[in-house]
Image 1: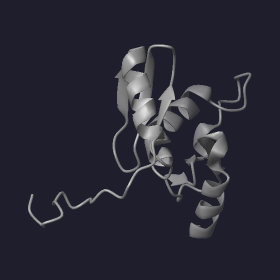
Image 2: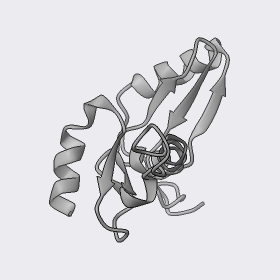
Image 3: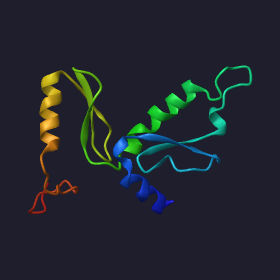
Image 4: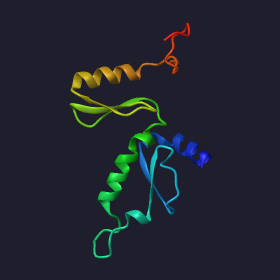
Length: 126
């Protein structure tokens, strides 16, 4: 599964997708994709569609931040005045206003040096 995860991440330039699993035992995400059990999202026999769209959409939204966790930080605009900052390992930060979006887009488009994750400075103190 780890090898497949790495292969999917390497091809993940199209954004977050959906992978349907044949079993209930599965990872929550695989590469930049949300994984969901196929059988749990089949529509009832009397419906026109084969899949239950609402259930798929809900599962996709629930797994979206985890699936995006493996990519580099980025701002995704959802309109002229709204968007979301995605940082691996953190909850998404919702942004509002074109100025705020532009500031974060410029900030995250710049090359970054490694940032210590221990919360301590270079001298070892907080």
